[in-house]
Length: 453
Image (cartoon, rainbow, N blue to C red; front, side, top):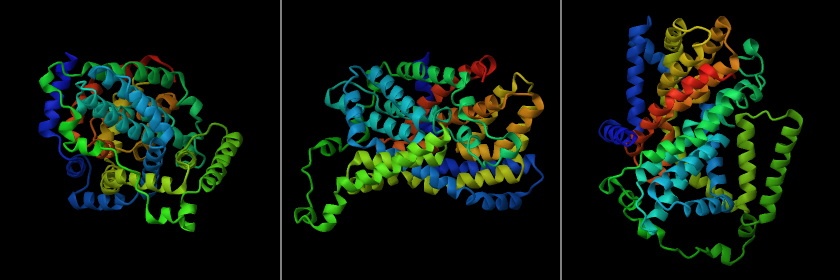
């Protein structure tokens, strides 16, 4: 049954899933129409709200680009790549390969969403290559979908936007809820149970989606036709500048300079945690990954090259994030998001509210595919309703986090970097992701009903 579900949604996505940018455009017009229908605003009002929100999250966009780029740079260090190479040699079957890719992506995603996305993409690509070289049939689109699994768990991990934001002094809801430490959200019994489920069960679900019909298996060489050429060993390209051992070349390749810079940065990281405790936020995560990457890349020029490669994955974020920010503007300034959240609040009580928060967040994430951005517009509604209904604030926050992350398996926005690295198209992986999304939703509902925060 699971295989048939995967095949059905894969076929549906191949036919109907548009390019991610067109997806953003379509959602823009859908939001406009919903705003006109359910609020007291006309089309021009909605266009003004769209414009007002278009550039509202530039700071957050930069944080997202940095977390992606620094995560990529760290994932492409020799130390991390060595681990990926060793892992890629483990699978002996196509289904085992899918489970392994999903497991690695999920663990990395719980550490950091950018790291999970990039490591998942690199694992999918490398495992696909090993399958091709060893003549083991591997369904490359499913490997790509498994590599995206980290984005289905990230908001309950160490880089989760909402839990980190409410743990940061000066956050916009501090006057209403104070500072909520991550010990009550990310390290709560609820989130530990959810993390264990994601690590143990999701890879198995992905494994069961492997096509049994050999004719339906698409190997990596059918997605990347020039794969053999890309795999040819290339001799190191020693530039004239390096051969002359110029002063500039020596500085660029100075291990001492990288080590000094990296140690200085990591000293601040140690000081931060020693004086503030384990208080994670987006800035300290980016800072840590930046200087750890500088150390592991050994020389400044190596790190510069890694960053240059990593920024290619940001193109989709740069183009599409303002459009989603505009959608957020319409949702926020028209009052549409309050109306949508209010629908769920109206049918909730103290026990069911976390579940309906999960469902509403999952729906809103399709229009606002940003954990921090979604918390910015939906957070006040969640907090107010939790106070009124007497619901645990940490549980309400994690319910929103789970809903936000879970429909990433339907929303292709964050898959842009993975698609660029693997050569796959959104429609080739999203069908499998949607099958996993539907099968796993029941667990989150049960966990929110019975497990304490």
